[in-house]
Amino acid sequence: MFKRITFILLVGLLAWAYQAAQPPPPNICGSPGGPPVTAPRIRLRDGRFLAYKEHGVPKQVAKYKIIFVHPFFSSRHDPIIATAVSPDVIEDLGVYIVSFDRPGYGESDPDPKRTTKSLALDIEELGDQLELGSKFYVIGYSLGGQVIWKCLRYIPHRLAGAALISPVINYWWPGLPANLSSFAYKKQAPQDQWALRAAHHIPWLTYWWNTQNFFPKHRALSGKVGNTFSRQDWENVRNAKVSGREKHKEHATQQGEAESIFRDMVVGFGSWEFDPMDLQNPFASNEGSVHLWQGDEDKLVPVELQRYIAEKLPWIHYHELPGGGHLLPAADGMSEIILKALLIKE
Ligand SMILES: *[C@@H]1O[C@H](CO)[C@@H](O)[C@H](O)[C@H]1NC(C)=O
Image 1 (tube, rainbow, N blue to C red):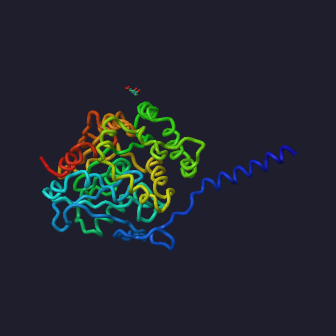
Image 2: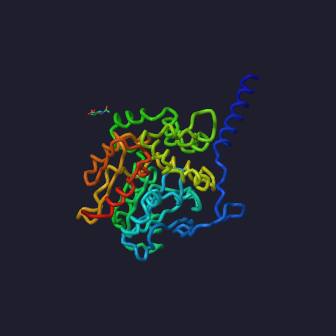
Image 3: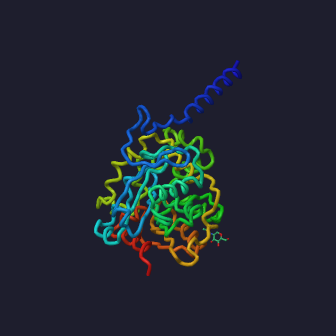
């Protein structure tokens, strides 16, 4: 009798767990009942739409053309490098910047089949369809900075130069020494460790993990993002340099969280098909450069690991900023410095 009740309870629990783990289907932009399409979009090789937004000088007269890759929980509306630099400087330099909604964000179709490579190909297609020429620059920030590794791996021949700003590190990249990786991992808040572990080992549970209220979620999702700020980050927030970001958050996930932020976690911290530390210099004859920017007080991306990666790739121009936090490009004058270092050859 008891065995039978236990069995029935167990089956019930499993059925509930399975149900709870299934994210609702995305609310596709432009579909009946879905959010409206307001942005220009290109159609990609597999039929998906990619929404974009242009900034700076018109591309026809631009001296430099840049594709910007946005961070976690963000969208084409927040190309910090375009908004934090004064319009005069952008004009004087002759910079055109296009930002786009990464798949599943804002008004871009989800890409449930996303691979390590597919986002690099999306970026290449964006460059082609917007006729940015045979080579363009790429800049990515935070989780978008991580995407730049994929560009360096899969479309190096299309790059004029690249900047990775506070790029998020995947603790499971095989090239990281196990002891260093676990040292850095343990410095993260316990709930973040658990959320990332779940994203890496049980990706199909990621949606459930981050929407339930029993296990702690990642701080970036729990509304306690302030805990991840450094002293400099707090100053930037107080000076309202990042104030515009909050209002775009709703737009970022308007098609649902499963194919935007949770897909992001699973791809960012899942198993990769290559290791950034194995990359070759795409600019062997110095025709372009790759820059990596990291604050040494960044509480989301451990500086120890970034230093290690930079040491392994001596062709990268590594800039470590004392006192810098994760909101590095929002610090006074910083975005301008990052932009000029990338574009202007000494
Ligand atoms: C990891 O191990 C290496 C080699 O044994 C050692 O040199 C290094 O100091 C260790 N790092 C940490 C953070 O324990």
